Length: 210
Image (cartoon, rainbow, N blue to C red; front, top):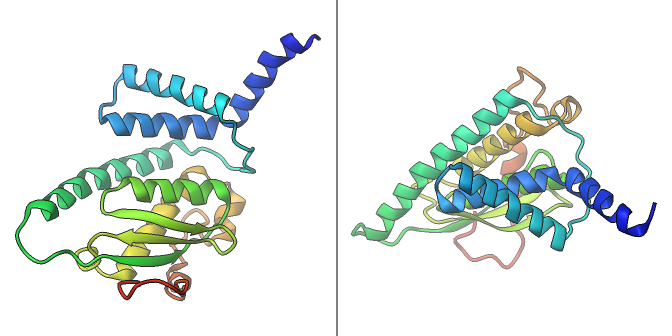
């Protein structure tokens, strides 16, 4: 087989191995436009293929499975959070009164693997009012900047919400072995809130840290 004929096959294999990135980039494109239509989905897919082709990412070791119903639950809850948070942030921007008290909250995730950590961090950042400013794979800790910590219910509520998001991500995409290792075997309740509350933010944070 000539080098010219091997090139398309290599490209197809690379795209196949990075289908998670293609799906995520397409979803981000549709969310940025705010309109779920065939034109936006196709345009997002084309752009995702172009990005993965021109800026190839290293393969991520992810041995999981896609559970359709759990994926629907994940996407539905994300869209709901996105809708509600958009109005809340818009109201905070125009309402009279004191300036919201922001804070940085450290959350230790159950699973520090690249794929699940990245999906959780990206979905957290896409919801208005919160932004992941740092993520540490070695410890599985993400640091979120929260626009209004009081309205969010305080640091513990932010940790609970983030861990609940991670749980939905894991239940949608993680293997049974990963779920069992994280204490999220089918039918089990979430079991990592105490560990998250023990996280100590790195030094150098402001006094609004949590």
